[in-house]
Length: 456
Image (tube, rainbow, N blue to C red; front, side, top):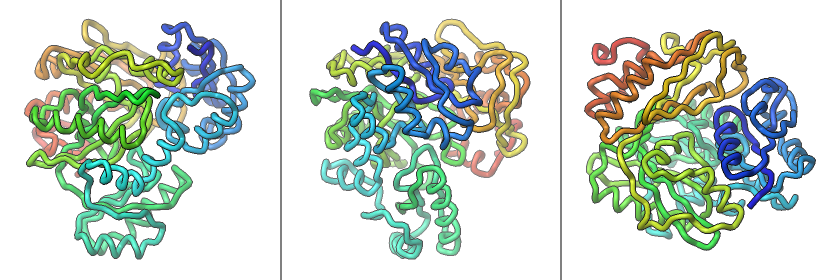
């Protein structure tokens, strides 16, 4: 087992990894930008090294600076969390060259699954259903347009190297395709440094269901059940839950098997997520594989009792999976809400500022993942997520009530957040009935804060 790990991230996920390392008896090294000198992750780690100015490109995305910090500190491994360098093939290879373990899958696997065209080919060969789409990614708008015209609209334009909703646009007609392709490609180049784009058929109203997988370096792979991530705004997830209220048991069984097939075909080890779209007839299609820990991993941890971050660390160190598939039992229902520094009354405009008051909810079955503290200055340079509020209860109805109670207790003063918006959403008739399509329709029309039932 490692003696020291460097965390190449910030915010709540860095704090989450630090705490897991503490429980394993592993020393931690944090990296921070000049804007994050007073951040919680910088204070909790055993060591902290400042690696550059606030802009991510000059700090958290600066591979040379991050690796220099790892070498100077004597860290034996790096944990990338999610975002930033977590799915960067070049960085994973650089770690190998420096004799530092990358806590995640192999660079070859990241590369294979990160390229949407290659991922599709791999899944087709493995017998996993895929969404109709381009065989090869392209930077040529005319080539992409011709394919979209051929398969028919609506289509989804996606960055081949993308993730997290970046570089994605829905094109409903030929007339708007060229403009949306240019916007998505520009965003892809800014976010990932890659303008290769991919076009696939848009399955309107489909459920977004992902399966958590774990694999070790001995070829053992298991799945830990699904998460329903259908409620999204501009392709950014807002609420996740497990189990999905939409899936039939037979579909769940087939999808779990397909997720393991997908991970095996990719030669996967570590924690990863296989994402599917599921239509009204319960037909499911592979969408992509995220080769990292997910933001919503806590809901899986609560129903399985498995610490995914600890598993990632043990797997990277060469240890086998702690459990076999027959030992995985999902109990109860878990829901996660993402609390962001966004103003729903101003089209979810992000904001920053000082936390002047803070009260975090607690109690049986309530978990809060955050890096906030009273007096903390939320910087304007990074993702707007402030808190992940997660609840666990015996049933979905009880979990909804517990989440409403926890949201009602949560107080964040000094900046505007989406807490009240989520409180109303979770308490709506649509959410109680698991009518995710109706909720997404309201969100897609830019509905602002207010009574959701009255906005139908």
